[in-house]
Length: 234
Image 1 (cartoon, rainbow, N blue to C red):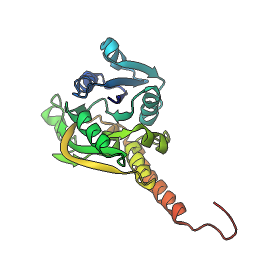
Image 2: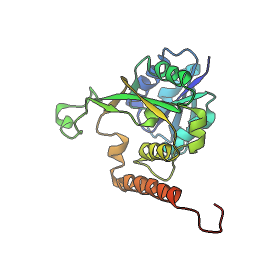
Image 3: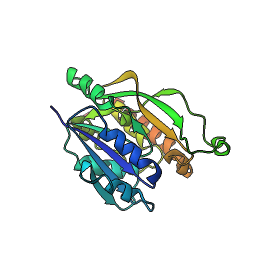
Image 4: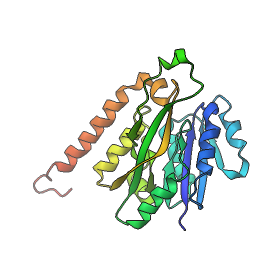
């Protein structure tokens, strides 16, 4: 059976990390490895990860951003299939098995993603809940919430390290721009936690990253559609 790698980048999420790691270890898919990349956390995230011992592979790096941490985990991984899990989220036990089964059934499929259920974290007080954006019941997950073939990840070249806020959006845009195939499983297989300190919240000063990701995708498409100049090979 093929190996699946589940990569968890973490930055100052000691409160949620153990639950994320356990949800990865609890996957029904038997041949898996769980890799945790500590992206320069200043809290107890490293101690939480180390507490799992040999059940996971753990590495720490200086703060490089979410994309950098994911890329390091991918370089460390040995799996034929690669999945990513944010350190404040959690997986349903059948998530990886369900997605890998679809990939193995269709050799033309590059990646599989599922529906994501959002929830407000239980420790958030009633007062603070008014400052956390309302949770959507169920939304389609971006590609980095799913499982992909390693060849597809390598073809994209990993996650951008130039952005903070829109790393997943940029990855999905480059996936589409390269013509890679994906399928959406109409099942909830991931739970996304909202707690007021999510990456998109604490990186609010980088909202322009989303516009930059969209602009970069449009530029790639413009170049791809441009006919070669007469007398010049491209």
